[in-house]
Amino acid sequence: MIDKSELPIAGTKRPPQREITLRRTASIVPQQNVQSRSLLAVIVIMSFLACLTIGAVGMIRSTASSWASQISREITIQIKPDDTIDMDKTLGAVRELALSFVGTTGGTILDKDATARLLEPWLGAGLDIDELPVPRLVIITIDEQNPPDFTAMRATLAKKIPQAYLDDHRTWVDRLVSMARTTVIIGSGVLGLVFFAMVLTVIFATRGALAGNRHIIEVLHFVGAESSFVAEQFQKHFLLISMKGALTGAFLAAFCFAAAGWWQTRSIATPESDQAAALFGSFTIDWTGYVGIFLTMLVIAALTTLTARFTVMKTIDDIDNIRSDPGRIDQNQP
Amino acid sequence: MIHFENVGLRYGMGPEILKDLTFDIPKKSFQFLTGPSGAGKTTLLRLLFMSLRPTRGLIKVFGREMSSIPQSELPMLRRRVGIVFQDFRLLDHLTTYENVALPLRVRGKDESGYRTDVVELLKWVGLGDRINVLPPVLSGGEKQRVAIARALIDQPELLLADEPTGNVDPPMAKRILKLFMELNRFGTAVVIATHDLSLMDQVEARRMILTSGRLDLYD
Image 1 (cartoon, one colour):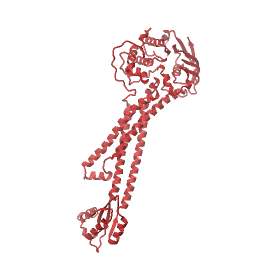
Image 2: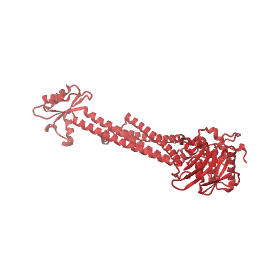
Image 3: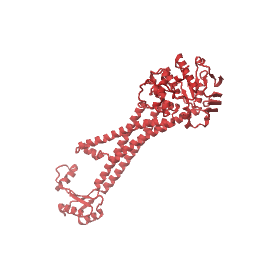
Image 4: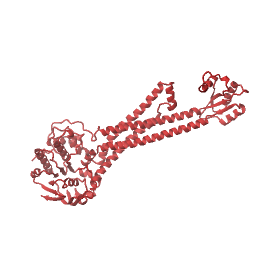
């Protein structure tokens, strides 16, 4: 029979023994396994796509608003050629008349060379503008905050110089604003879809990763761990994975924008860059974009952590419910 | 400590696996649970571990009727019961030491307070040189001993062991049995489910024999 003092159970007093070297106590939830790595990859990809979409939508919004504001900053007065007028004098008079209105900030007469360049795509190079009855333009810049009274300006022009026609670009501005709004709505829709896909993917990937750890939940439950303790262990683990994944994805997206912006700066005034700038605007993210990226990271972290918590609690509930209902047989149980 | 009265259990619409079981597991008692394969030994252990509820009858655990125990209180009650699973249920990413220390860890105990106890218990079950080893490299017998040590470490009031000597050689089986007896001497009630007649012959203890779902007691 064993001597009572020999039995090495908790709380029994014994003489000091030789110290044994133990490794640093491992986490209850395995840090590295296939499920965790897969979840990390999924979170990196989804975070990257979501952040990229946020940046792209922000870029489209600012580009669209820039188009509209650029055009609404100017009006054009067109003077049709007429034998009864001296074109150069009329151009000057129109400019003076326009500038006499409150709300105008400057006026530029488009000279013959500039007008020829404008018509070059249709009439070819080497055009002698005096040979053709080409209308001439005066570009008036206006104060966006306090625009002039276009109706009065139009009436005055019609009265004093009937050959002049004022174009306040309203049609273009309206179309552009409408297009910009549509683009932003489409972009927001895409962002919503990407977010929805991200939410579902992260939830299912987290649940998948947890399914591979069910045996750990069971063992912890059976050695007397409370549900909250088990949930906390998994929450911590999944929070770490999600933060790592979300940060990596967000960093990659920000890097993509920075790289595109750098390329745009380096290749300024080249046809490729001009085309890209015309289509997409400037590859920069404003502060709202960075706030969006940060919020995306928070959403991913919260989603992963909460999914982990609820899944663990549900798994424990299932274990107890299956066990408390003899009609349901769980083959994994002892 | 545990009281069963006319307990019956069936899975779904199938036949009754356990029929009219009426018995007590008194404090500090020692008993073997035996019977042919499929007689319901593991199912009875599950009932004792509060991981199944009976189809009929009354079970009282530590003075409380099982049907009235809320789910949230089960972990606290299970802390008073140690269990050795037939398939060990060790966590492969934790060392032998960490697996044995797990019940103490989940109770929020400080490692410095239990380190020596765990190491000593592992030495006692013959695993002193396997303390830092992961379960996948342990033999079946070694895993068995780790599972036993994990069940014993917090000196439970009731120890349930499902075939605890099934994977060890006779000298180690004898040693494990002595450990159970020693634990029993300290006040733990022990229920060992086993087929091993030679093991049962070593101890004068109550035998609970399950045959076709019915229980016969031999004190």
